[in-house]
Length: 406
Image (cartoon, rainbow, N blue to C red; front, side, top):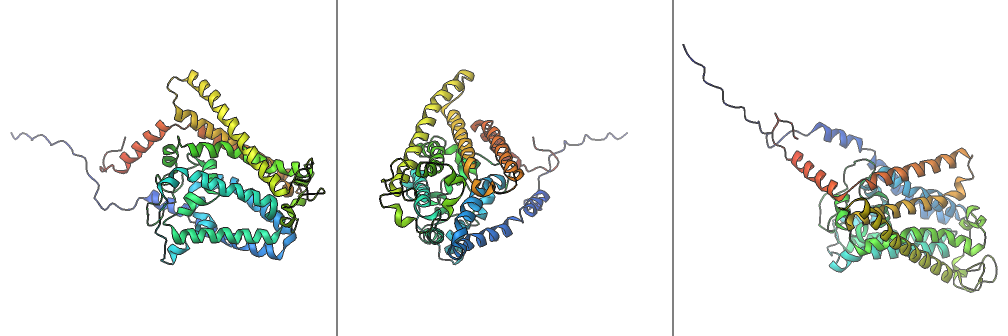
C-alpha cells in the first residue's frame, strides 16, 4: 500500500514587487480632494485683501483683523498642520519660482538652522508692532503690508531652495507648530514637496512629529514658545495702556484710524495720539515696542520658572522623567495658554455684534478644541512616537500576503 509522503510546510507567500495600489490610499486621496479648491479660495482671499483695503478703507481693518486673521489659528488646528501647509497663500508665492522653473538654489546656513526660531519670531514681533502703529486701522498701510510680505515670500523662493521661506522666515511658521505639534487632532497626509531639495533638517512637511522631537531641546524653540503667550497678551493689553479703557479695543474703533502711522512717532498730546494713557508724551511707536518686549520677556520668565516647578513635580511622580518629557509638557502648556489668551480677545469687536448665541458657541468651540488638543498632547511621549514609527516601518515593508502583520 502506498504511503503518502508528508506535505512540506507552507511557506509564506511574498507579495509581488509591483503590488496594486492599496484601496485605503485611494480613499485617503479622495478624502483630500477638497484641499486643492480651498487652496485657491484662500489665495483669492489673500489677493483680495490689498484690493479691498485700498478701496474700502473704513471696513478693511475690521474685516481682516477681527474676522479673517482672528479665525486663522482655530482653522489651522482644525484642518491640521499639513493641510494648512498646502493651503497657505504665502507658500504659493514662495513656490512661484519653482513653477516658473527658476527656483532658488541657496541653502540656509548651519547657523540659521539652529536659530531660525529667533528669525521667524522677530518677523512676527515687528508685524505685531506694525499693527499697533500702522496697519490696524489704515487700509492703505494694510494693503501695502500684504503686498510686501507676499513679495518677501516670492524673493525668498527665488533665492533659496525648497520651502526656505515657510521653514525659516515666515512669521506664521512657528505659530503653525505651536498650535499643532507634535501631531494634529487626526492623521492627515503629509505636505512633502513633489521634488525634495533637502532644504530643512528633520523636515516638518515630511514628518512634523519627528521634527518636533528632534528639536525638543532647542534653546531657540524654548525661548520662542515660552515668550509667545506673553507677547500675545502684551499685544492686546496695549490697547488698554494706550486708551485707558478696554472699550477702545472691544468697541473696534481702532479698526478705522487712517493715517495713524504719521502720528505714531511723535510725542502724544491727547487720547488719540498718546503712547500710554498715563504718559501721553511717549510716542506710540515707542510705547507699543516697550509693551510687546516687556510682556514677551515676562512670559518667558514665568514659563522658565514654571518649568522648574513642573519638572520637580513630574520627577517625584515618575523617576524615569527626563528633560525632554518636562520640556514637552511645558511647550504644551505654553501653546494652550497662548491659544486661550488669543481667543479671549481675537474677533471680539465683530463677534459680539452678533446675537449672543454665536459668540458663546464660538468660545465653547475654542475651549473644547484647546482642551482636547492639550490632553492629546500631554499623553504623547518620545518613546511612544519611536515605537509607533518602528511598527509602521515593519508593516510598511511586510512582504507576505498570507500572514497578517503583528
